[in-house]
Image 1: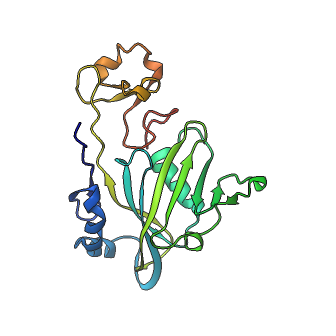
Image 2 (image 1 turned 90 degrees about the vertical axis):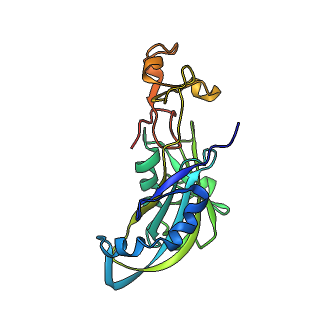
Length: 226
């Protein structure tokens, strides 16, 4: 089966690019500077250090985002953002793994875990890869990378989505039409994707169905979307 190429949209110029091309595009997007200068975060009198982060599903890399973040935000704020955009369903625990250390939302000293109060610029640097896990039962695994560091004319602290993947095309395994529902039991053997019509007849019943959403947590636990 040919590999399906993931695409996404730049939030500055609204152009569509492949996942592999998006990083290069963002480094030279001509619409970025005008868009930035008209944003609420822009302030020509101040400069702040920012990181360009790439976030993707560790085992579902077709889900990805490019983020622009001020380097002085905490890991906790980044964790909250990831929960709000991609993950939150039942208030599960979460943690970042950075090099050989774990930064947890509820740290356990006996396991030598640290809190998420650390700022990004205290634990990250350009080129580093690090990891995020949400829900230690039915875990969603993310990989993050600091693509670059930059100084921007800005005020405050922020996280901005610069680009995000287009929703991957999922087809109903019964009839081949676009899937709108997924069975939380059958997703593991790739027979969980269903259109509305076929979902109404699915053997597991409607209580086992979740909506198809643009997130690496699709079909997991009780996650229904943003």
